[in-house]
Length: 133
Image (spheres, rainbow, N blue to C red):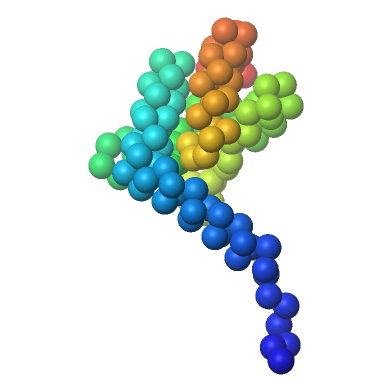
């Protein structure tokens, strides 16, 4: 008998995730992540933000954005995005903590909601807060 409790739910979750990925096709899945990443980058750039390490070292699953200096470490603004708009972004770790945000671009929820939330931000005038807050 094994004395460890197996994370059975995690194994089933992994199995389902892999099944969905294979059904979509790995090339299709990668292309979807890349399409969402490029659209998000274009929208963030249009808002006057700078994409961190743009170019060869970008990952299409995560967009890293430099936090404008006027926002300090960006935590208050990040909390406001979540509270007011339901947009959740992450801080970074180590030497990049307080310098960049990480915005995930994977999953079906992102594809359906990320662009709408981005345009809500721009249209609401909150975009001005990037340099004013």
